[in-house]
Image 1 (cartoon, rainbow, N blue to C red):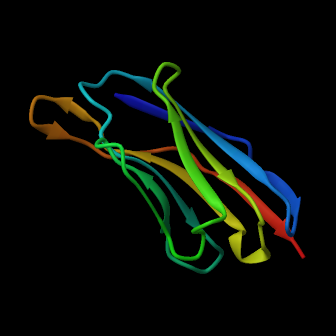
Image 2 (cartoon, rainbow, N blue to C red):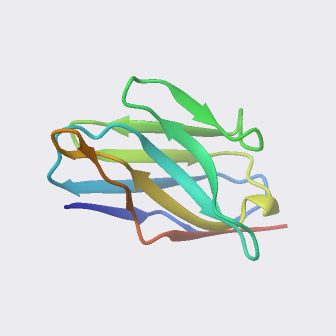
Length: 120
């Protein structure tokens, strides 16, 4: 089993910055992809940023140049640095992982989410 625990959300003014953290714990053979998703009120959950097991990153067009996903393998942490925030970034942010938990078997795990609110 793998647990993901987000922290760092809250209220920030537009044009401000915030960093989200995701602590990963449990047992796995390899972590593979790590990602941040978000869900705004009344909208579907969407991918914000992904960090692949091969070391590449990709971002939603709406956050490119403003958000940065990174990881600390030694601490089993994943971060999302968010700069130049705007009210459209408001939502619940979820940490995601799809580790290989048994040989040939991958599973998806989600954190409980952390609220980010950007005021005008």
